[in-house]
Amino acid sequence: MPKSTPRHDADLLQPTVFLLADLLSLEAAFLLTFYIRFLTGWLATPLGVPPFEQYLSASFVLLLVWAGIFYSQGLYDPTRRKRLEEDLDGLFRAVALGSMVILALAFFVRKITYSRTFFVIFFFNSLFFLAFGRLVARSVLKRYLRRGRGVVRVLFVGATAMRGRLLETFERLPELGLRAVGQIIDDPEREAITGAVADGSTDDSGRHLAVLGSLKEIEKIVEAHAIDLVLLTLPFRQLWLVAEVADRLGDQVVDVQFVPDMKRLHSSRMRMREIAGMPFISVRNRGLTGMDRIIKRAFDIVVSALALIVISPLLLVLALAVKVTSRGPVLYRQARLGRDHQSFDMLKFRTMRVDAEESSGPVWTQQNDPRRTAIGSFLRRFSLDELPQFWNVLRGDMSLVGPRPEREVFVREFQQDIPRYLERHRVRSGLTGWAQVHGLRGNTPIEVRTLYDLYYVENWSLTLDLQILLRTFVHVLRGDNAY
Image (cartoon, rainbow, N blue to C red; front, side, top):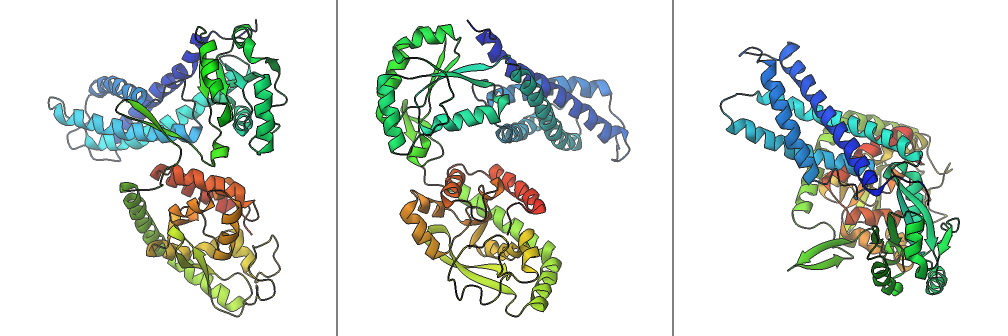
C-alpha cells in the first residue's frame, strides 16, 4: 500500500496552519494598532495612554470571537479548498462581521472604555496582516504538499471535459493538496467516453492517468491505493453510475463527489437550496436581480463621477493630442449592443483613420494594425482610448465591470454559433471584465471569452468587481494584449 498521511491528519493540516496564521496575524495587528494609536504621538490621547494589560486581555477575547466567526464562515473547512482570491474575499467578509461584533461588545461593556479609533485602525491592520498571513500559510502548505505529504489522493471515474479542467487545476494549484492517483475504466465507461468524444465534451488530458481497474473492482482499488476522494466526472446520461459507486463504497472511509459537466451545460456553476427540506439544484440563474442591481449601479455612478473629475485634465490633454495628430473628430462613436440588446453609442478617443473601414467593412482590430493614427498605438497600448467610456458608465449605458460590448453585426454572427452567447447581455456591458483581466483580449476566440463572461454573470459580487478593477489596473500598466 502506498505511503500516505492518515486521512484524519490530512484533514487537520490545512485548518491548523490557517488557524495558527490567523491568530498570529490578528495578535500582530492588535499590537501594532495599540502602538500606532497610543504610543506614536500621531493621534491625540486626551485621556492618556490606557494600561497595556487592559487591551492585551481584550485581544484574547477578540481572538476567540474572530476565530469563531472565521470558523462559521467556513474559512477552516478542509473540504472547501479555495483559490487565494476566494480566500481573501472570505477574510474580508469575516473581518467586517467581526469588527461589527467587537464594536457592539465594546459599546455594551461600559465598565471599561475602549477607543473607537483603535478599532477603526485595527480593522485595516487586520485586513493587511490576515492577507499576509494567509499568503505565508499557503506558501508553507504548498511546499509541504509538493513533497507528497498531507495530500488528498483522488481517483477519477468518468471522462468528461471536467476531468481535464480538474487535472489542470490540481497541477496549477498544488496548495489545494489534491493529487490524481489514477482512473477507473469499465465497459459502460468506454461507451460513455466514445459518446463524449463525439459530442465534444471531453479531451485527452486524462490519458496519462494510470488505469487502476474496472468499476467492479472499485472497493479493492480504493483500499489498495489509499484513496481519499472519488471524483465522478460522468456524462449526464451515465448518472446511474453515481448511485452504483455510492452503494459499492458505502462501507469505505472515502468521500465520493459528483462533478457535473458544466461545459456541456454551458454553465459556470450550480447552486443548491432547500425548499421544505427538499434539495433544488439551480443550473442557470437570471443574473443580477433586486438589491444587487441597485448596489452595482450606485457603485458605478459614484466611481465613474469621481473618475471623470480626477482624470479631466488628462482627458483634455489626450483630446488635444488626437486633434493635432490626425484629421477627423476627437471622439469615435460606435454603436454597440448592451444589456437586453439595447443599442448605445460607445465612446472612445479616435485611434484609427476616419476611412479605416471603408474598404474592409466591420473587422476586428489586428496587432500592428496599419489603420492606426500616429498617437493611436500609444493610446491603445495603455487603453487610454477607453477613458471616455466613464461617461457611458455615468449615463447608464455601461457598467465599470461586465462583458465587453460587441457590434450588432458580430452579435448576430456569434449568437448563431455559440450556445448561451446572448446571456452575457443580461447585465450591462463593462469597461473591463472577467475575460479581460485573464488576458483574453484582441483576437482571443470568442467562445473562450464567452465562458468567462458567463462566469461573471452567474457569480457577480461587489468584491468580484473590486478584484477585477484592481487587476485591470495592473494589466493596463503592463499593456497586456492591448492593440
